[in-house]
Image (cartoon, rainbow, N blue to C red; front, side, top):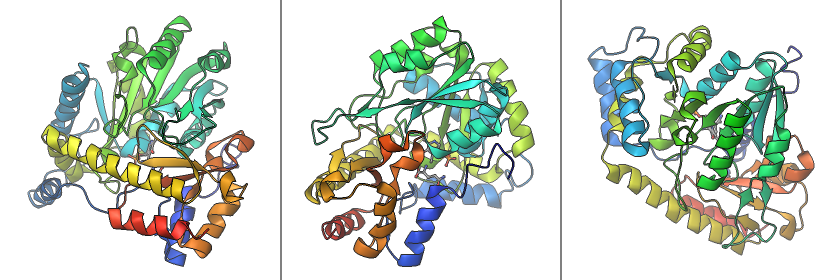
Length: 388
Ligand code: PMP
Ligand code: GLN
């Protein structure tokens, strides 16, 4: 491994999912649903394969049907107008969108301000670009519980993190792993800072449809932001096809061209037939998106109550399909030790949140559980966790 990647081993998700397979434990670690997305979207993929649509290299920016659907999605939901030909780029999942954006926009030595805890690929992608990550830590409401405000951003800390070397702010809302949904006031303050300091914003909004309290506001929709924002999303979460790896960005032609320059040498193009299917998925009626959200809201409530019953401090998420807990009340102190012992002791797998921190101490006693699982699986997991 070269010096840039030396600090990165196997991702925690692969490691913990392997542990779940090895021990037969219930996997509330890696965030993927245990039921597939809509039947009609799967049928659309089969049709595309059969009809020979996308079986050879699709166009570099993505198939026109999907780019149109993405542009329509941004316009009808958020009033954001993007030209499907010049301002949309399809990527191999949000993961490639993040990597290509950072490789395209960050020069060696540039600083990237990112919310901590951060999704694991951010640190690796910043490193691959030769950038330096500057974390701003979200702080939990110490009380936890149903009225907890969850993990909050300190805007002064964010302001202090920006220096003359800062190139961009890497945002994530709704936020993995904390479930924080940035408010309009917070996003407005971030936008003002970006404009004042002439920064780009790369914003990961893969959980945009999974907001239970409050609303999702794309920062690109705020004054002065459209021209400096790369917005990233993915079909993995919205349509429950994490294995299809269809993601995208929307941004100005200049930014899209920059990201595409990097993307074309990472994967060249993204897999064809699934793009046609996701184009159909994105145009499903609103009842699909509302249904997914309501189903997951019920699961959040079930798992949050169950974890609280089992003795965890629960930081109730406003969005995503993750709950971050504190294990201190269980007499445990270290999330990594806890997660390594959990499959044997309780038959459940979870993710130690400290791996998403530079400030390991801040995340030491935090553990993340995913609730994108069938109700009976969540109920069984809760029963098992009570035996800790
Ligand atoms: N960003 C965040 C915040 C995520 O949680 C994930 C995991 N799904 C991704 C990006 C990666 O998305 P994809 O599977 O589309 O590459
Ligand atoms: N995004 C998912 C999570 O946070 C997993 C993605 C992955 O395994 N890379 O759990």
